[in-house]
Image (tube, rainbow, N blue to C red):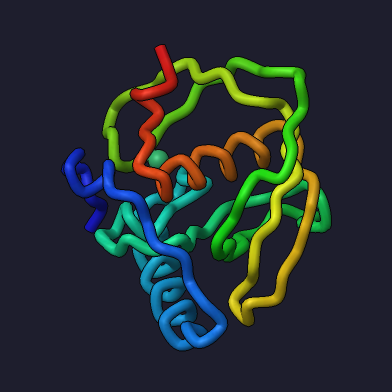
Length: 149
Ligand SMILES: [Zn+2]
């Protein structure tokens, strides 16, 4: 079930630790289970299934993620971003039937951990950068309606 209740979505999600590997695996399985119901989606954060933890699955195709594939990101954070900003349409499973124009940096360097808590630092561009920023926003309780028009 996708959460659409704003008071839940506005919560700030909590970081995961190296001792949380079982929890990380379980939540990622729940995310992959849910995303099957939404064939056009490109990202899903744990808070969207009611779990306030900093984990999301994202469908990425740049950086080392070539060809496109679903990737688990844990504790992602933007380390740096391009000055160049791009405006594009976004949707959100938690805000049904809504498309908004959202401005975001075109590229971001992101630090994140994987399922095994291994740390990565990678640069993402275009749609990938957008999806990751959208999911990090979810972890901070920020919705596209807070940014878009
Ligand atoms: Zn969303």
